[in-house]
Image (cartoon, rainbow, N blue to C red; front, side, top):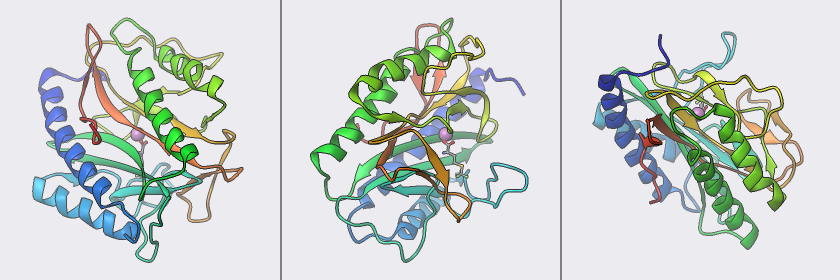
Length: 259
Ligand code: MF3
Ligand code: CO
């Protein structure tokens, strides 16, 4: 299927994106000390159902032989970067840095977004991490415009964040989205020497999602076969929006949940 979406598809993506953002906003507000991660997942399932949308992560497999994802939301706490599982007896504590990542199908198209929230407020260091990671996403987005290149996004993010001493996760990247949860092209959040030169075109739909750590860039997969965490145990943050490339820049498909 074409990576360029039609105006009709883009209209449907906008509708789905508004639903997705509304659901994420609600989960974000429920992400307080004492809440279980499973309870947040249940909110998403209920809200999607009411809206006529379906969670796109539920049952998703990254590889054919992989375990189907068991939730509607990925909830990744502290040193967990992404793909943390919702679990009934996992309780969020004050100061936890909680990544909330969510996707949905609506009218046959899918959107993807994530935010990071610090339950009950964090330290100066963790608050700065979250602020700076969000700023990475804004910086990456500022590059998007038909005629620019995919690598302009990662270059700008790296130039912005490297001098601040953070790590940029390299094993996971942004991606095309819409007909599938993950489509071509890959969108790295870092400067890559041998990156293929892919031009941004009007109608391309991309999920941009920087993952930034207080330490190094290396990550590993936990025994649950899903959760990705930092190797050095450093705290990580993650923000993501879905956008459509336009002649003059981009349109946000998933409105910011915290704006
Ligand atoms: N939201 C993730 C991403 O941005 C996808 C998660 S796949 C899941 O790429 F199965 F873990 F949910
Ligand atoms: Co994504």
